[in-house]
Length: 97
Image (cartoon, rainbow, N blue to C red; front, side):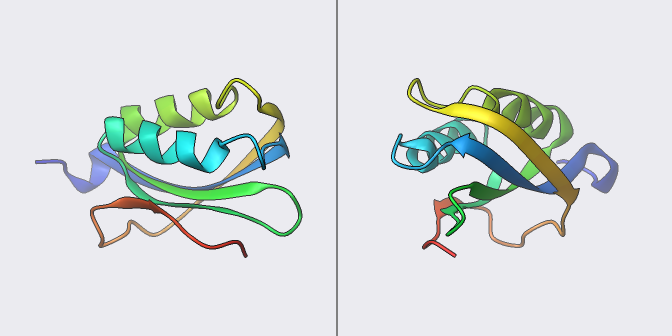
């Protein structure tokens, strides 16, 4: 069982060519593979936003991999901020905000 000090949750904002390149689908698949919780959505400004939560090492590795994303993506910046740990144990896509 993971303790409070071994887990973290962050909101990640990925900017660049990240819409129309299967970035959300890639994020869901990668997050599920890593047993992470949260969600991902496109934003109306062209960025992708995700709540990524779970084991510290898995969250950090996911953020590092977000710099690459799927093959057609071109990430130019990633911003992160601390978030509340979600109660839902799934990782899923949300509608555009």
